[in-house]
Structures are given as structure tokens and as C-alpha cells.
Length: 84
Image (cartoon, rainbow, N blue to C red):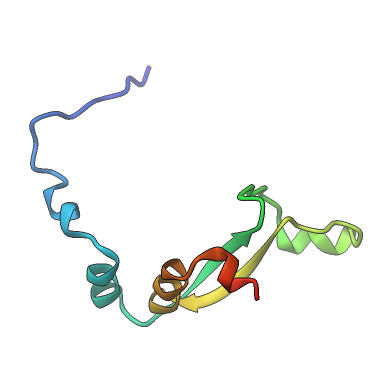
């Protein structure tokens, strides 16, 4: 049987304390990532490949491809301004 473990008094994640958006932007690189956006903040899993069999299905979210830098820029702009 598996049991949960709680780690205390460790420096295991100390390096993560410096992970600001600017730090991550400088260290993650220029790769493209899939980002999912939803107006309702609800994300329901679905398989893109199986949507062909359900043409009336309208996902509540959309998939966007962007670099991590573009993602950071979007986080800094209020959501109401992005919808314009």
C-alpha cells in the first residue's frame, strides 16, 4: 500500500523560490508550448482525435501555441484587455 509523505525542514525546493516570470523567461528557452484558454476557467479533457465523430461538440476552451515569453506577456495584460 502507498502512503503519502510530507517532507519538512529540507532545502529540496529552495532553488524554486527564485522562479519569477522573468527568471523563467530567461531560462526556459524559445520553444513553442501548447496553452489552453477558457473564459469560464473550466477545463474539461477531450481527445482532439475523437472530435471527428462528434461534430456538434464545442469545447469550452481553445488551444493556443506560443512561446513562454508570449505566455508571460499575456499574463501581464489584464484578461478584459485581451478580449478586445
